[in-house]
Amino acid sequence: MKTSQLDLRELLSFKPHGGTMSFLGRRTYLTDMVSHGLLRKELQATVGYEMARTTITRSGFIRGWLLAEQIKRQMPEVWAEAKQGKLGPMICSMFGFGEVLSSHRTDGASDAPLVETYFIGSYEAEQQLRLNGQSEYVTCWEQVGFASGYVSHVQQRTVYFIESECQAKGDCHCHLIGKYIEQWDEEIDPYLPYFNGINIDTVQAEVHDILKVEEHFPRNFSQNLDLNVKTNYIRSGYPINNSYPMQKLIDMAMTVAKVPTSILITGESGVGKEKLVEFIHQHSDLSDKPLLAINCGAITETLLDSELFGHVKGAFTGADNHKVGLIESADGGTLFLDEVGELSPTMQTKLLRVIQEKQIRRVGDNNIKDVEVRIISATNKDLEAAVEAGEFRQDLYYRLNVIKLIIPPLRNRGEDILPLARYFLGDFNEKLNRNITGFNYKTADLLLNYDWPGNIRQLANTIERAVVLSPGPQVMPEDLPEEFHQNITKPSVNNGIKPLNSIEKDYIISVLETLNNNKALTAKKLGMSLATLYRKLKEYEDE
Figure (cartoon, rainbow, N blue to C red):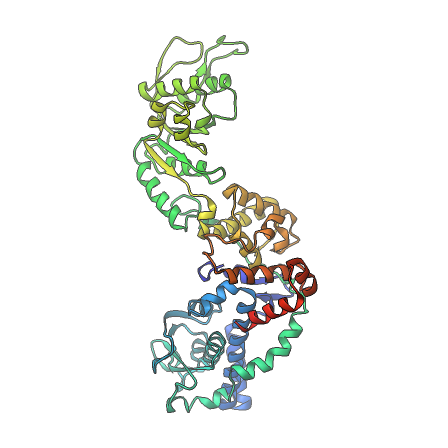
């Protein structure tokens, strides 16, 4: 999973009826800003300004450090981007710290700040103004500590932030500046007492034992968020198209929808060809006219002839009444011919005549009827190869293929996988009367890393299966079919090409998790000595 694919619904979880809540697998609890502000006010009244600020700053430092440790341990791909400074602003927004106006990061090699961030709407500044009015001092103490702890862990060097401007003082924004501790000059001196010597070494020692104990606790916490993403599913009337290939395709479909030109839609089975046809029809000038569809490969030639062209009474045995065919019924509108590559030579000839002459004749009838119908066809068959093999008429191919739209497979649309999965989850929750509220972040990774040979149809079926089988409230990795677990470390375009050592690391860790952290069994299964496994795990911890 990449930073851009993070979603709070995969990271935050809690039981539908309350009781426990967790963020990234660690138990947490929900509080509100007013309570937080009152606690802060009570601290100052009880222990004084200096001690209250020190306590809150140091607490924020530990909180930021622990979050970075969670990401490092559980989301290594996101952690790689965290080191590049891409994750911090998103985390601040996700935690409700305030809106990040801008965040500038350098390599810290000069006297310039390592990180410089501007916030607006800081929750600490807001509570100061609400409860105590305008302040003489900066007030974002926890935020300063959090940023210091988080960035210190990411950099593996102690970083201290200070707040130079604050909305609680009447400034237009809250301005945080972070530098390596050795980079600061006397400007940091007034702020040092609030950190009270806390640094990455002291925090590591302080929480080491806590993290060791935590590893033995179950992480069966789950969430109860309202996953109503149906409103996000439709964009310009078409299913999710966040990925560039789909956006490009939809732009082209919007253009050709306005003219009655024949269109050929190709793509693998399950990519959503029928959805694209519906989209084109809805955005055309024929949208108030009928859209009729038929699968040319699903019925016999005799029945297809009658379905498309209709028949008169007595035309053949069983023809007890007149029947209007689909082409005539779609007059003025759109006819969708799915799996057009399965048409027999005879039906290909008849269809060509309809396109060229815009006329039909019912089976058993001598009368000819004029029709004006737009034909959109689709196939997962290579029609060019079929033409070369003499299986498909070349003239019909050119008539159908005036405009060709190719729908990319889901494996080439990584940005669409999770949004689609979330949509289907909400949809099946409603249909099946379930309350599965999201995907565990490890489940999300499995979905992203899978190749999806059956494309969107397979994705929908997978999510339906998970909704039926999952005890809830989250879809966990074990709720997915076995092939997803076998594919966990397979390189894909979704996550980019990885170095071999990174793939080896991911695979070893995934096997270790599968075998419930049984190192001896893991070493045996991987065909390596136990000493080698321990050495590699130690190397991973030091990265």
